[in-house]
Image (cartoon, rainbow over all chains, first blue to last red; front, top):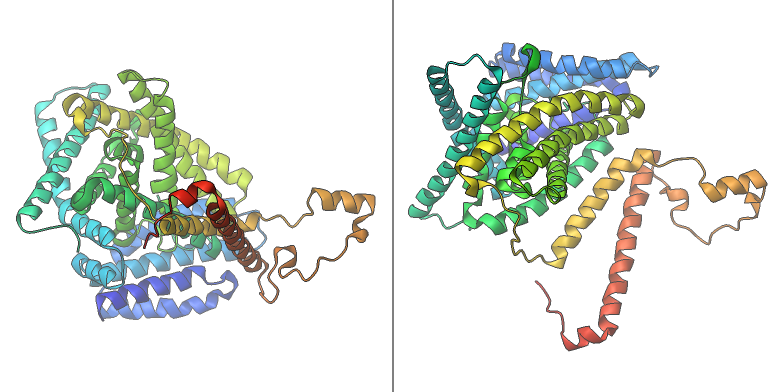
Length: 188
Length: 321
């Protein structure tokens, strides 16, 4: 299945499932079966899905408490939990089967403007670079500062984040100049 | 924590997507005008930075840790338009790859955090810094702005939950507002501390609100305006009150409501489109058609006025393709 088709099927399916009328909830067995079959076929590890589901269930529980005034409360709360979980599962499956470059290509194929697919691609390329840069800054800070004061620790952290911004900005400029040197003339 | 799927109803989701789309489309023009071919690498690397920044655990009082939203921080460095786009990319990434926030709720999450939060906060900063021009004053305005961005975003999220009919307004707005008023303090401290450092080291990287010359075709303005209006109609449809308005109520009370003559062939009486099942959808359709009609009439009147005005005869307006 091409990435563009996978994206359309996933988002379309999730949209239909999420906006499905709450009273017709037995029909949700259809996406559940489809997800289960695809998860088996692509060997989706369910532990990460479960971990993320717990976070969403906490939020759903909180909102459910606010919905207690409604007489059809079990229906609403059940739908809340079910829909949030199924959407999580579906997106997890999509991301497990489709690496980022394919997702970017698929979105491009579907007509998403280049400014957005380009941003996504550059995020993919540089988020690991910047997070490891951050870890290096943290290590340097922890090796060189010996303060107990919470205020000074906080200020050190904020300064490090400011430094990360400066380095990221300069890196963005360097990347742009390198692209120009290699023939980049803006989007066609 | 962003709104997952299944928490908002269809009209709220659609309305949020329309408003978010209009806002981001407008932002895209401004950003491309400022950065030209550097736009894509700049937005991409900056979204990686905000993403990394949002993962940082800041120790706040009492052994708890706080996380940065980063809207006002990004706006202080990149300006409000780029900040909105950068935050949107981060939200899209979090939705797809970390399942933090739903796909149907992506419009709402973007609207709350990247648009209302960022622009609301930045607006507070611009307003306050007009009165406090010293460096300390600007940092203070930034703190209030960062705090406001968190509170505004949370109130918007609460409003969307209430508009979807799940929780009552009286419950959700105070709950969201008060909890995020506390969380916003962390955001304020972190934002000010980071910007203060960058001001000291590389003050040229702080964004200066200058004038970027952007020419916009009227068609573009109309398009985004109509999209935004549609978004408002979709979002506020549930608020359309079924109760009689002032005059109708007085007429019923005093007993002369029966003397009202029937309007001649009104196509959409009482803001309902006949033949459409659901009453909400009917109101939305009537509202959208009405908005477009009012826009059309206004446009026609403006064009006529332009044709007959003396000035336009001297300088003919060129047709923008």
